[in-house]
Length: 278
Image (cartoon, rainbow, N blue to C red):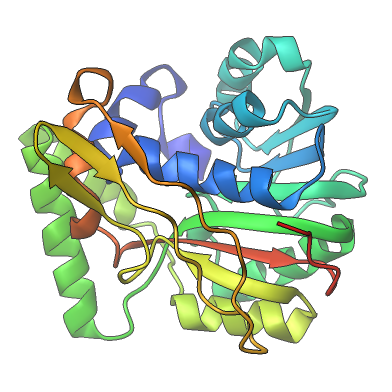
């Protein structure tokens, strides 16, 4: 669904329309770093202009980087952004065969919610086949609320937050038009599909109250990431250290993390039960 975005204007609105932009993408990148070997073989699905891959590569430079998107204009921007990592570009739809693996990590950000549920499940199954043993799939996504009440709450909080971050009325209308194409699934359904496919050790992040920001004096404190337990009831020890972020280097959406956690979620699953050592 990249064609509904203008590649030349894609990046800037993300900081106003995605809650706690840096924290959202950093959390996904930190999950990759915490669960793969150094210099991973990486595939980014729906890579767009390379935002997520840049966050990941800055933390753990990949041995190889494959970027998949149906928009050549988006991938041209991504190739320029990630030039020092010499990415391989795959201009194709999600329905096409995935690039040959095996991959240590497959990542995606805000791309799969455009697919019908059947196509999501099919793609998840092909991701499973593309991963190396113990490989991780990290998906940072927009999710459907479990009820109409939740959906209205998510939408109201999201749009009010976007306005507070400086989005104009025209930008809000454009965002609503793009979101009319969304085909989101609930987090519970997606985790169940992953279980049925055979993924192991799944945990979800950045949803409910597992991740939040708080005002601490004149600074913003990012609290430790606290993962869910895996399906066997064992806690996945992937906590991140507390970090203080100074307002002069982080835009004001950092203060909005708690407002958006219902709409956005990040989940990680492994191709086998060979969970990495923390």
